[in-house]
Amino acid sequence: MTSVLSDNVKENINTQIPLKRMGSAEEVANTVYFLAGEENTYITGQVINVDGGMLM
Figure 1 (cartoon, helix red, strand yellow):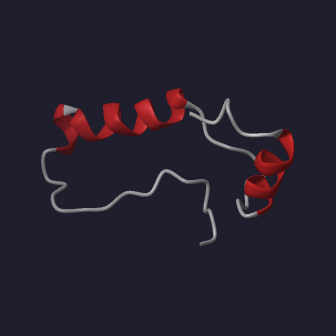
Figure 2: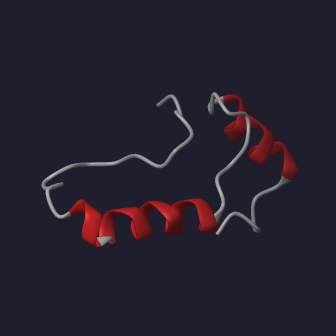
């Protein structure tokens, strides 16, 4: 998704993220895996941001 962005644009985005890097697809998938697990049947109606603390 970000492969079309210039390095300058990517660097600018990273300055807005406290972790100073973009997340990976695997990190998003790990969140989905956690939420879909049988151990988490009591979690409902939540918005979970997987954004490294990005400041908007």
